Length: 281
Image (cartoon, rainbow, N blue to C red; front, side, top):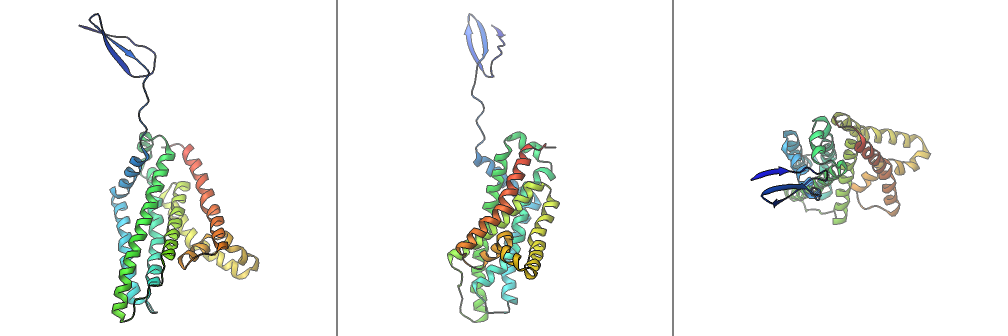
């Protein structure tokens, strides 16, 4: 039996049939390959967060920092222990570690030269960035839930050691505000990773945002009355600090919306626009 291939300039795929002892192969239009589901991309990005030693130990350090902060609160707290003492103690290392996780999850595609592979397998860069965002927010929420549990255990142990009553001064709503504050801080790190796309540069920018800018704005507010009234509307650290200490008023929610738009939404949108158009090397 002789096989004869008949090339036809149509979309790929083949249809084979027998014709008088000859096998005729025709190219027919075929459906394009199935799109990779977002859930699979999220799973891959989550696994990439644990695959490297640096990523693994950075995630482990979240739990370690929670335990160490709890021990420090028990040993060195100068006031009567309460649940809020442990939440605030744990919050400081969380505000440093979680943005680092977000930054490295984005910048790894450029600093470690993974971008060519990632964006070849998934050409739609926006879906990859969305998957990274879902993973980082999920890690932040899971980390804070772990920190809340560790703080609760520390509160029980601390009050037992001190021989005092256990004080539960944090409501569920207050704890949700704490989780929201950490998610916002993490998203700032994510935004800086998208905008700068360099690990060292994004980390330096985050420390300027978190530690240098609040000092400068506080100095300006202390010397200029006009800025003191304007500060909550332009300084995101003011309203994020309020999230750590209780519920917000209606005006404070508007301040949170304004500062988040200025410092998070707009830069993230500009960074995404640049990321989707930039050349991957």
